[in-house]
Length: 66
Image 1: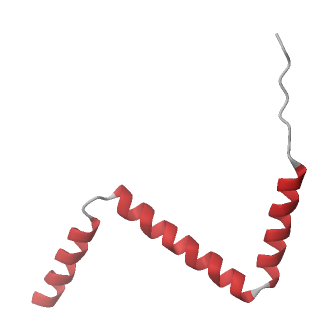
Image 2: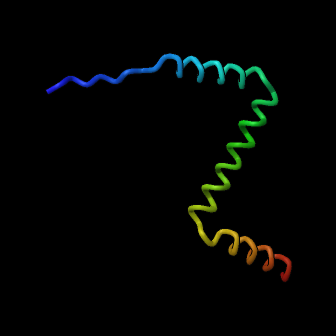
């Protein structure tokens, strides 16, 4: 049997570290990351609950009629 070892591409790791440093220093980059994170969370919620929009519309209509 051959011994398999995980190889790490350090150029990719360097790029990720530079990107994280840029996000840490830049206010616009932080806002962008928060906006993308919020968008991803919303998309995941809608994907996990197929009737999410219908339930939301029914809830809003119920609040208006009350």
